[in-house]
Image 1 (tube, helix red, strand yellow):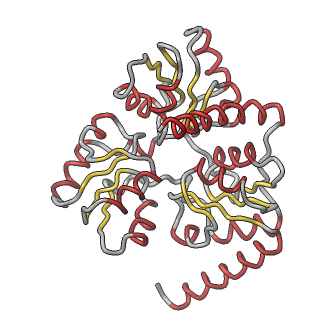
Image 2 (cartoon, helix red, strand yellow):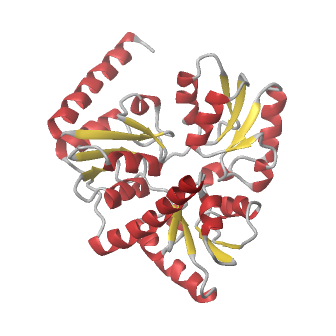
Image 3 (cartoon, rainbow, N blue to C red):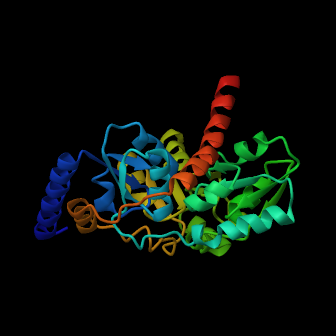
Length: 315
């Protein structure tokens, strides 16, 4: 990096710090963001973990460097805080694949089946669902329900992964993450051939035939934990390429390779330091959730959190 570019970044970082102090703001950064954004994070992690952490801070403003459904989740859990999304166009294609009408149609088609809603969905869809889940606890949530079948929205690949770990019938909505769906078996085979000593770690949003090649399947937070605790020195990472930046930073003695360079989410790469500064200076792109929707969506999230509490108590 040239000294000029580095100098510009340092000035922008100072502006971020100044505005953060002025607004009593906390900056949340998802693991898939660009390096400059990851470097300014007060809290970095997965979408739900970030929102839960922000709710516990005394910040007045949350700046969420991610995509819209993540900022909405923060607004659901922190109604007393102002939530800013630096780039209003930063959406999630998978979240857009399921609508409130779509949820209602599934309920009519499969009466009595509870709706398990992946957290990668809009506030309105969460409000229409029975219980949320994350990629880390989807199996646990589905198995906690005292029913024979469930409706799983919106990710068909995560649903398929859950099917292999439950006796319940899982009715899958046909949504998917375009970024994870780009990873093909041939890409994994090629990466394994190029890095024969590396373990392949895949996100459960990947296709099931890709997951069958994995040495370990994990959410983003699970990938960090696995890389840290594993004795292996090389890893092929089957998720959005932004993950590799911090994996390298946190594990300097280990090597990490992308399963495919095509696994880049354009929406996750929209946020820049300039966007963060502009959002804070103008208090723009405020994300709000209607109170009725917020209360119902929060119940959906709270039911999921209660499942984790029950498991912890019985362990």
